[in-house]
Amino acid sequence: MSEAAHSYWSASKFESLMLCPGKIVLEEGAPDNTNSYAAEGTAAHQVLTWALQEERPAAAYIGRVLHLDNRGKVCDPDTTKVEFTFEVDEDMAAHVQTCIDYCLDLKGDDGVLFADIRVNYSSYLDVAHDTAWGTADVIIARGTEIIVVDFKYGRGVEVDAESNPQMSLYGLGALQGYNGLVADFDHVRLAISQPRVKSAPSEWDCSVEELETWGRSTARSAVSSCITAAEMHGKPVDWEETFLRPAEKACKFCKAKATCPALRDVVADTTGFSTPATPEEFAELRVQEVTEAVVPNGKAEWIAACLSKVDLIEDWCKAIRAEAERRLFAGEQVPGFKVVQGKKGNRQWADAKVAEETLKVMRVKLEDMYDFKLISPTTAEKLHKAGTIGPRQWPRLKELITQNDGKPHVAPDSDSRPALVVTPVVEDFNDVTTDDLA
Image 1 (cartoon, helix red, strand yellow):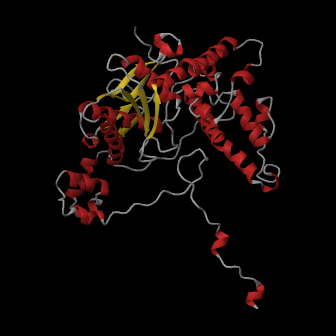
Image 2: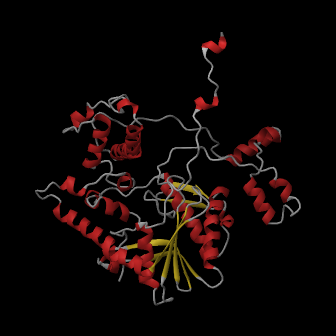
Image 3: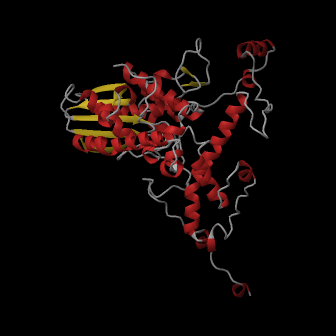
C-alpha cells in the first residue's frame, strides 16, 4: 500500500500531540515552512546518508553544495526555487563523522545497517497504514537486538533517548518492518547522537515487549485523544480548555503557535497577569516590571517560576514575527505594520575571478591581494590521517592545540550535565570595614 506525502501521525511531532491533542486541529492547513537551522540539519542528515550508503567518510563531501526548498527539502536548483544553500565544511563533516563512527561501532562485523529508511508503525497505533510512518536515520540489526539511531545536528537543548516518543515510534516501525524477517528480536536499543551538544550519544535499552506495550497503550491512547479533539472541534464544549495545553515541548515546533488562543493567554497571564478579551485590549497590555509585584520578596521560587516560561514566550514572539512577515510578504494586511527596504548587505565582487585578474593586471602584491589563513586543527588532523603530516610530526602539533571550555549557562535540572559549583563573588573578597581602615 502506498503512503501519503506527509505522515499524519508523524514520529517527530508525536510527543507534542501527546501533550496537546488539540494542536492537530489548529495545525491543519498551516504553512509547512522551515527555518535556516532546520534546513542546516537536513543538509547534515543528507551527508550522513550519503556517507553510510556509499561507505565513505564524511570528509569526502567537503565542498559539496546542497540546495533546499522553503519546506527544508533537498531539491534540484534547476527545477525548484531554492530557499537555502549550504556548503559542506570541515565542521559539519566532523560532526557527521562522529555519528558515523558510532553507528559503525554498533554494527560491528556481523550487523546489518540501513540508512535513511522509512518505517511504518500504524499497526501499533491502530490507524490507517498510510497515515503513520517516519524516516529513521539509521537502523542496525545485530543478532537478536535491533538498534535505531537518530542524528540531531542542532546545538540547542539536549534530547534524551529514554522513553522518547519519537524514538519509540521509530523502534516500533523497525519491529513492524523487520522483526521475524531479518531476525527474531528480543531487545531494542534507541539512541540519539547529538555531537554538537555532547560527544556521547544518549541511549535507552528496553525489551520488545516493553516497547510494544507502550505503543498499544500509551501511544494509541494519545491518538484517540487527538481524534476526539478533532471530532469535538466547533461543538458547544469548552474546547480550548479541554484540548489545548500550552507547554514548552508541546509548542516548540507547533505550526499554529502564532495563532493559538491558549498560548496567547499564557503569554498574557505571565507578562500582564490578565487575559485580554479583544485584540485592542491585548495591544494595550503593559508588561509587569520585574519588581516585588512579579517576584514577591525577591524569592527564588518566583524567579524559577518566571524563568520556566521564558523559552515558551520567546518562541511565541518569534512565531508571531514570522507569521506577520509571511502574511505581509504574501500581500496580506497586518494593521499597523508594513514591509520596508532593509539595510544593504555586505559588498562583494560580482565576479571574483574577473576581480582577481584585474588586480593582477594592476600588479597588486600577492600579500595585499589575498587574506591568508592558517589551517584549523581539524584540517591538520585530516592531513595527518592522509599521511601528509607524518606520525612523528603530529604529536608536536597536538601539543599546540587548545580548546576552550564551554561557556557556563543556565539549564533546567532535567539536563544530564552535572551542575557547576559556583562561588558567590562576595566570597572572593575579604571583608574590609571602616574600623580596619582607621
